Length: 196
Image (cartoon, rainbow, N blue to C red; front, side, top):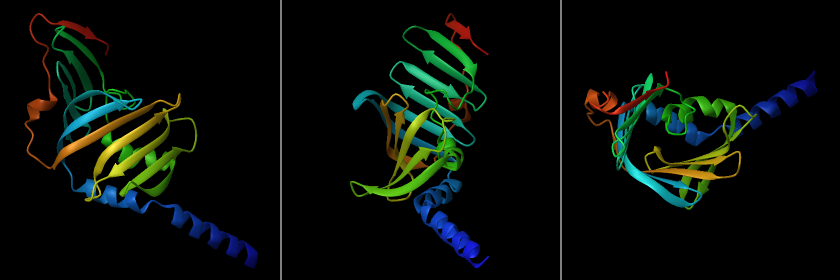
């Protein structure tokens, strides 16, 4: 019995040491955040392929403005509008859609499905998440934090080894965002593809 108690204590201490201190700071910081406005850049395989403006409001309301493309979600429906082609694709909101950045998933859901390790990379605090099984669509995620313990970059390593980076800059926390930023009505004469 004495040995079982020692083993249980050792396992408990090991689990506590493996808890991510940085994740707890991020979660605490995120509790104070109701909205975010930021510039963003996305890199695929190390090369920048898109940039634009990112808007977020709890709960899972997002808007990405990328040159002639707008991706808008109210947390239930996602609108992908190509202004140049005057085409709108409407679908049910899906957090696993690669076009949707669900900050809440990275902060609250994924950590429970991953082993989470704090690291310092290039002088920045990071949280490295390795999935415990194959239920997630990535084999590694790295969250890079700014000096205020808020997300400044997310790096995903896909199962095929390809890396996708989503970098936030000029981050503004809790700005006033008009509700119409997260709603969308297809323009007149646009081609609408409704996948719902």
